[in-house]
Image 1 (cartoon, rainbow, N blue to C red):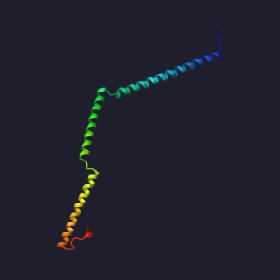
Image 2 (cartoon, one colour):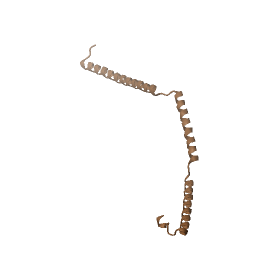
Image 3 (cartoon, one colour):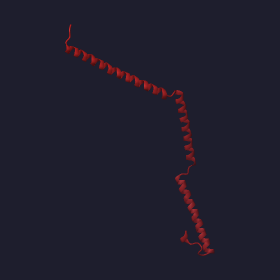
Image 4 (cartoon, rainbow, N blue to C red):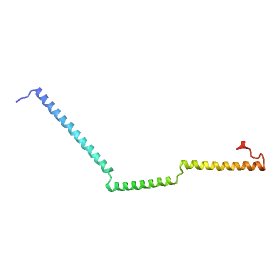
Length: 119
């Protein structure tokens, strides 16, 4: 059996195309394997054991409890807005009484010593 030149070209072309397709899929498979290996190495470097996770959870819970107790302490110790205003009003009332007292006594003993324009 003898093949002509055109049949040989078709045969070489088919074998070349087959080898190219096989090479493509082989390269893709190898690349996938390499990326899986890199991902596995990343997981090995960054994984956390159950004991470490439990320790972190315990520390977080303790920290949260401490923060909550600190917030409760702050709530007990803080001065509310209403209390502040009430105290300021009381202080102003006392200052007004002192001022009135100074004016009334100053007017009896030394008239004109304290001028209201200066206050």
